[in-house]
Amino acid sequence: MESIAWSEQTEVASITSFDIGIMPLVDEPFERGKCGFKLIQYMACGLPVVASPVGVNRQIVEHGANGFLAETLAQWQEALQTLAADAGLRQRMGQAGRRKVEQQFCIQVTGPRLAALLKGATQTAVMETR
Image 1 (spheres, rainbow, N blue to C red):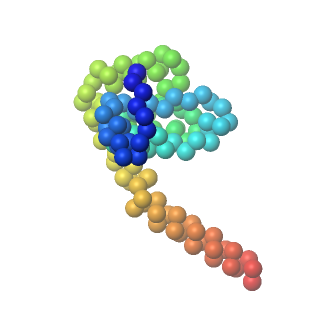
Image 2: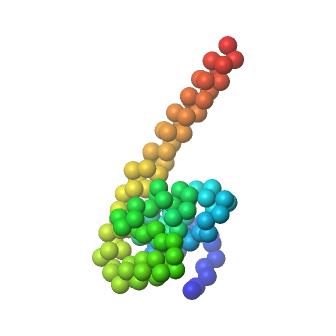
Image 3: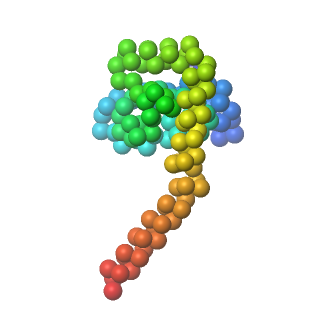
């Protein structure tokens, strides 16, 4: 393992130097509330991912398509060994993850959703005050 100091300027370059993005979590209340941003970052950079099936990770990771969900030590080992041994699989899963980010999580998709939610909330609030 190599520890790399985080920097906004080098974050994308650092992530794209990885072969696989990982997000191990314990299944506890705090972790169930995490947003999965790390997975989205990895996938945006075209990486396949291996993650614990905790909280929103189950919705972000399409097991076998853009990465693997792994709960036990044996599942983690199998997923990582499978990806480490197959560059083509890493590339295909990374591309699938990138497509998912573009379709569901990019600002061009989430921006209009947020605007619509805020508009709806303000309209509801105005109607309730009348």
